[in-house]
View 1: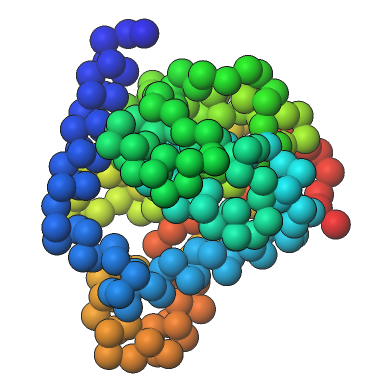
View 2: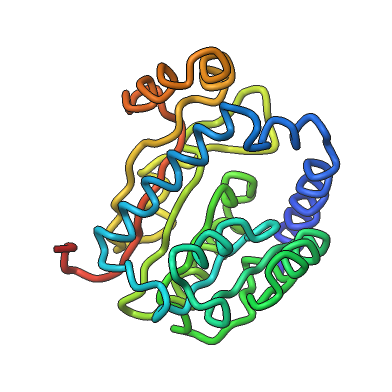
Length: 240
């Protein structure tokens, strides 16, 4: 591994550890915060719609990997959708996150590792999920390595479930947005099916505590949304 990726991964690990220790951020992302609840419900609704669109409703039969799993919330939700916990795998760079995930769902396979060197065989997974990870990776070389690893461990008929920021935040230089064209460049030759979701966080934090129904209505106006969610696949055929 070159020196730049090593330095970048160390920076990312420090940044994630800092975020985890920040009580203000914990409160911001708590589901008792109406803006965070709005985003979670929207993400879950669209995730289920995309899984259904691509015939991935029978999660019990799928081997699934969540890259950058944090404390494992996505995989625990997949268990609620019917996934077999013994066929679920979660990976994160920060050991304390994996320790929490293990305590919350010990039946799932958890591992501390880096996304640019996935410790799995080629063509191992039916579904790979990656949520709000690559926008925290600022080095293009590392982004490319991660995207190649995601494709490597995916079965030929497998899918990537993508969720991340489409735009940069000028107030947060630790993240850099990834728009649809950038996603296509990260996965050349892929079929990229993404849609804009999640009301812009500053607007959601202002509106949702006062009027949740209004925030939900604004979120339906795609041009006010800041994230991309959808499926990346490498098959030529379109979904039914």
